[in-house]
Image 1 (tube, protein in one colour):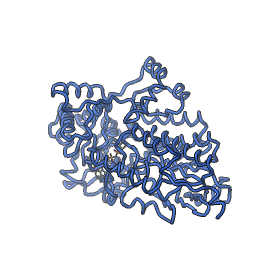
Image 2: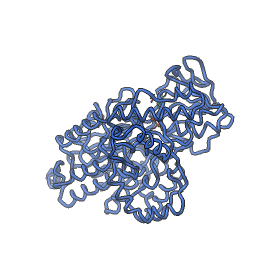
Image 3: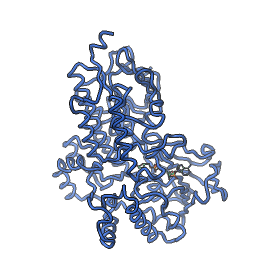
Image 4: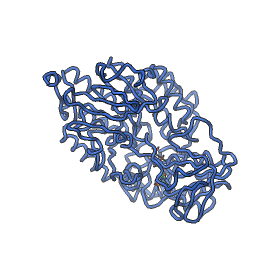
Length: 546
Ligand code: NA7
């Protein structure tokens, strides 16, 4: 038993919040301000979620920081000043800690504590959560702000625990500085994480060996310091910027176009793509309206990027290996880099093509490829995450009639709006696997979701109701819509964590809502209409009568 006063024998809490990332922080603030009795839990020793854990070299957000920040507080918007267009992890963590201090959030969190199970009790209409330390907590509502990328995937490489040198997981980076100087360093994985690490470690390491299985498309970030004039302008216009972000597909101010690719002549297309390349960030994605649905248009953009790779990388053989083929651009998370391709021009950086020469195993001394062993002093695993569902399925969640969430999701996650599930009353998720998730600004999805849950709780409290869940029919209609849109999207056409392809045995398929942030917000609004007409409720008196 820990030193907490909150135990199963105490009066039930109103809300238990799980997760200390952006979602859990905002939920803690929101529900506290509503006067609810809350307790928040976080597995780490501090707040920040993914930005607490991911301290790997070069970790940086790929959305502009003025968007990738809380929108709910005009005061914080004025008080905090971003130094760069795309903030690096230390600045993001500073911001998180600033917000935590400003709102006095830490006192509500129990750190270094995981939730080990959550069980619904039909008789009392309450959840009992058990922590990793064996403590039981009873609560009316669960809000799982556990994040779509919080469970690093255990590398599925034979012998990975045998390595005798320094081994690091990108998603569990040590808090102490790591030195690469003079060392033979291996990086396994070339997604967004591997790309950020390679460009940072390449110039510092004695030798860097990049083990690439699938090359990613990456575009220039063109990050810059924000000038005082620009910051002042942003602060003057923040209310409008926040409102526009809410009406956009990505939850941010990225340019968007209504112009279809083939509606403009080839020479104009070229100029537009060059402009987007030079502007940097994810501008390329917004250049034409149909890049995620028109495979031919998409291939033109993919070829444009391949040409750029060929222009930067001096060795034509290496350039060819770095050019992604066989899947649409933007179907894997598009990466933003500062000098990724340039790094391969350094004499100490070596691309190991693991399609041609697959990894056989990790040995005590390094990585054994089909062609032989590469001896290393350090291996960095940038091998990704058990995305979307990993954190929610890491423990038993038992809903109505003893149903385990793992069984409900045996064929893939199913929920209403990524916010809650039929059969799991009062169990809410933020940035759940059937909302826009990784395809939009996660902070703004979190805020939308927490606000929606707050509205639902207020409605229940005002109307003598004690439990709610979506009707199975409403949930099925939402999932039909998610599937139908996913079927049209090119995002489903690559083997990525988006579709569960990176974890053996995981159900396959795109379960993320691809309709964009603004439409998602509209759908949440529609679901709350008519007194949450597509939800079923249990009146409080029905429980009192038990
Ligand atoms: P990703 O995008 O899932 O990338 C993981 C990388 O690791 C990817 O290149 C994988 O190659 C590679 N990988 C994984 N397992 C292996 C094995 N066994 N052998 C060789 N290579 C392997 O994760 P990230 O952390 O980079 O990015 C996650 C998200 O964070 C990103 O989408 C942004 O939203 C931010 P594969 O593709 O499987 O061939």
